[in-house]
Length: 159
Image 1 (tube, rainbow, N blue to C red):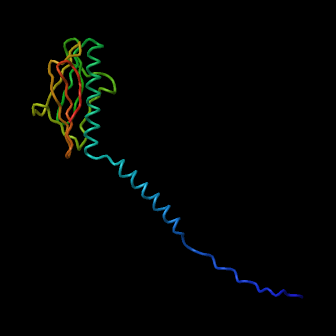
Image 2 (spheres, rainbow, N blue to C red; image 1 turned 90 degrees about the vertical axis):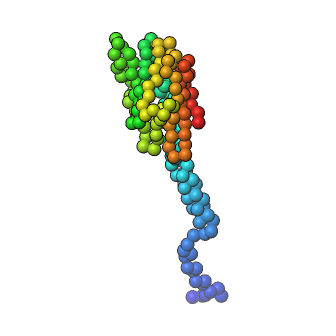
C-alpha cells in the first residue's frame, strides 16, 4: 500500500454561536416589533378624539334622519352615555338601527354639557335645524374635545 506524502488534516470542530450580523438582524426585527406595539396602544388622547369623532358623525346622522323622515329627533346625554329618540304620534321613541343604539361613554372618557350640566338634550327639528344649540365636552387625562351643534344644525368638532 502506497501512501502519499500528504498527511490528513483533522476536521475542524463545528462552530457554535451566532455571527454579529445575525444578532443585529434579530435586534432590528425586535425593535420594529416593539415600535408597532407602542404605536398601536391607544392613549387617552386618542380615545377622546375617537369618541368625539364618533359622536359628531352620529349627531350628523341624527340630523339627517330628522330631515329625511320629517320628524324631530332628540339626542339625550347623561354621565353614563347617550341615546337617540324620534317623535312619533306625540311620543318619543328610540330611533331604530344599529347606528342609533344607546351608547355608553368609555371608561376613560368623561362627558360635560357646554353649560356645565350633568345631563343635556340636543333636538333636531324636521328641517335639520337645532332649537337647542350647544356644545358637548369630552375629556380624559390631558385631552379635551368639544362637539358643537349650531342653531343651523351644523355639527363640528374641535378642541
